[in-house]
Length: 301
Image 1 (cartoon, rainbow, N blue to C red):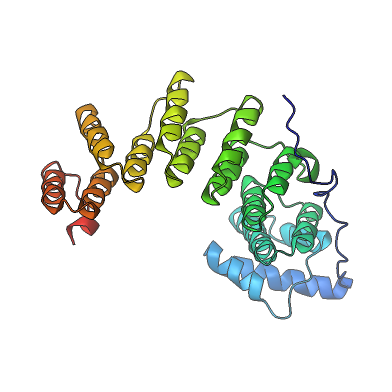
Image 2: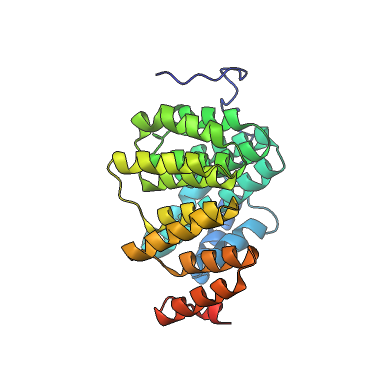
């Protein structure tokens, strides 16, 4: 089945032309190369290196030739070369997130074009940032189109992880119906895993439609995926969120029989029955949790 969305121009997500880059002179580039290489070799902490490169004054005029020069300078220091490459990618992701969060999507696409020119990988993380920001800006269909056009605009084949990122962003924004439709239409192309089903089930639980969540989890089992601890906890939280205390308690009892309870399950029930006014039962569940060794330090405080 083809996946078509109306209302978005076919070229809506074409990347813009690469921005004009400041091309440093040979002498200036040699000096920059030395400065950057020294920063990389003296900053062993990748996070600190990323921050230093981002805040360097004056701003570093990144260009393909400058990146190439730095990598050549670090040729005999493999760990430093990798640290530089990863930090540069992280810096661009940070800038991408800021641009998209401000809803300056032309600037975001310019950054993506620049990353490709610099030879930096456009990863699942790159797509996740863009998809999440499109959805939060009220442009969910553009996020879907970004996934479908990923091989053309990102230069890489979209993965199941990319699909799951999109589903998660849609569900967290309350667009569960759209997320479920996208999943149904695209799971043959991208595949599916327990994470995919858990995301959709959790989405339905978040809007207090537990019967839809139960149906999704039944599909998951029929598709050959074993329920995970997260699967059980998604539905357990859904029952209590929807005020279905009796159903939640019965499901918790079934989880205990199957020996799949963890600290998340216990704390969910304690919170749920406590909010329902059954403080005595909440206390009993807490004591059971301690006796069975599921209590964490945080729950003991």
